[in-house]
Amino acid sequence: MIEHEKLSGGLFTITINEPSKLNSLTLSDFTRIAKLIQQADADDEIIAVFLQSTGRFFSSGAQFDYFGEFEGMEPEKKEQRLRSEIATMNVYVADVFAQHSKPLVCCLNGPAIGLAASLVLLCDIVYAMNDQVYLLFPFSSLGFAAELGCSVTAPLKLGINRTNEHFVFSTKIQYKDMLQARLIAKDFHLRPGKTAEFNSQVHTLVQESLEGKNRHAMLNIQQLLSQKDALVRAQGRETSVTLPFWLHGEPLKRFKQLQTRQRKHRL
Image (tube, rainbow, N blue to C red; front, side, top):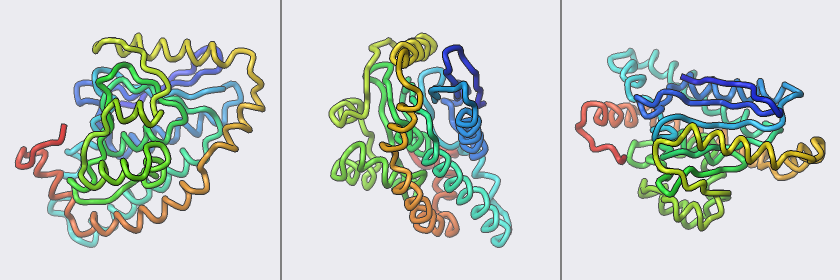
């Protein structure tokens, strides 16, 4: 469930709220998040946008049960759906994040997996709730390639050597790695179970930091620092590389193995 709220002081929150499922996301959820970012961008009263979550995970990634819908589907129909849903979603969501004009703040309360980890890297500022947070890009384990612009954002924010290691071997990018790479702007050192308090503290910090700042200067700085051109180029490249894996069925097979516990989850 994706919720949103317009707060006082020009703040806009987008909340992933499905803690019983570790905030796993459907493809429609990713599209919904992108549409809300566009909505906030179009609202002149909004100054900053927050991508946040609930419970102990930021998001465990894509929902397994969604991919079960493809089982037994006619090959032609399956290919049509994969192209229209997976490829289109990736291009649309990455494009919205590339084009956004207002500071996008991630409240990282816990682990972020797969496409959800890609969303974290697309944010402009990342705050951590504690040292238990991590990112995991299990693309090689699941049988497909990088998506949602992470072939650009990960090397930019973590370094090319560290990205190669974690992407190729599907290993966790731990808190200490994110801290060393300066990906995390601040650690709030709150214990597990304090996600609501963490989100509120981030809102307060950002609102206080925005006081007295020139709005037009902020927006222009945001535009100058954006990696829009690189992200736009990455959309087509990532889609053309990863879509054949989906069409050949390897990710669908491995998602089913995870769902039926034939394959151990990297969590």
